[in-house]
Length: 276
Length: 342
Image (cartoon, rainbow over all chains, first blue to last red; front, side):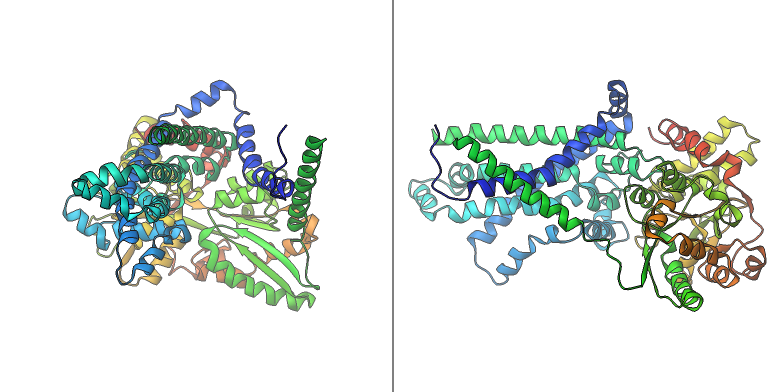
């Protein structure tokens, strides 16, 4: 028999938790499942293996992966700078990290497009180097980096803050080079948090709509249609196709879930090794 | 015993939250003292027109009945607006970009059959057509659909699979090809495929395409609704030119009463009045001033300076109506999929 918890309020708080989860997450997601089941198995397979759908999945996942990796690299550096150094404007910079959360994604999308199109300020610069930013996959990656960066920084920051200087001092005293200190001492400590940030940024990127559709150009020929665009296509066109949209959404959901699950497993194995 | 207790507590808590949630959502429908709230769900480019029209109608209504009326406008992509009404947006009337979107609401049981004949001229108080917008000077020499197939011409047009307005663009091009090749379907497909090969950016909606062309400076030519093109000319004087192709399509935006909602809200009569008033000479002129072609011939002629009245226009009936056109061209694996894409 389990002992009664000494912290009161379990019933109430658990009740609220279950109710919120059901109302906000579980029931809506279940309805996605229910809608997609209205298609027969053959129709379902037919739909999700259509060339434009497969291509959209490749684009979404591929770009989100690239963006998440880049976010991890720059996220670590950003978090490092914000935690380890003092400089004027640090608080301001720290606050800026969260702007992508607060800004409506459509605003971000339109602004990024304007900046990175070949008539825009940054786009012209890239164009002169032979890189076409807006209306290409590069543009999609840029938008996904924008929306994903806070996840990585905010995941790593607290861990870096708690990491005592003594570790690095000890490493230095024992003769480790700066690189070795980072790679063998600091990095293993932030790796779980980095994986979490990676997973969140990846999941967000795969499902992103608002900021991506403006900069991508949505061209089937250039392979710049993302999955969320295909879903909206099904819903916005004259023939509203709920079942088709739900079916694609379901596949997206499963892929995202599997990826997050995989990341959790990696994290679990890694933490067991470091704690052993 | 303990376990039962836990379940009971959890259930009570869950029910409390559920009740709270339902009671919160329940308090949105209250009507204020005597003032009637009336909602018109429309599509993107009509924003400015309806803002002006609503002012006109509010004054008219006050004069007729002595009552105040509060008009609510809602704008967005035509297809998604239709969907929002189907999903429960409490619209009293809809004024959408194409009949097909209204039919979708009819099929959901919210609009009575026969709406197309409820108001004059196919329930289209104003119309528009598809034109080209080019940069000042028209360097690529774009005069007609033929010129859009030339190599190196970059075209901006929205995606017909997600934008109702874009369907008109496609059909206009198709009609030109039909005239040109006497209905030889293989050649027509090849022709339209060439146009779509030149499409540089395919936005999800008409407003988005205008932004891409005007704000972001992409492409040589924008295939656009005439009203959007004329509005751009006015807002950016000297920067753009409007080219009217020899053949185009008569775009008939449709208006309808959402009977189910109007009956429930007791606004059936106001709805009828609101939509009929669109056909009065003053409202027709207002539409003309906002670059929609008044459907009233006499008033349309007053705007002969604004609109090119010589265009040879086909209508959706040439394609067998919207349902047929959608099936033939824009459904999965239909003609658009065949010529565009990989």
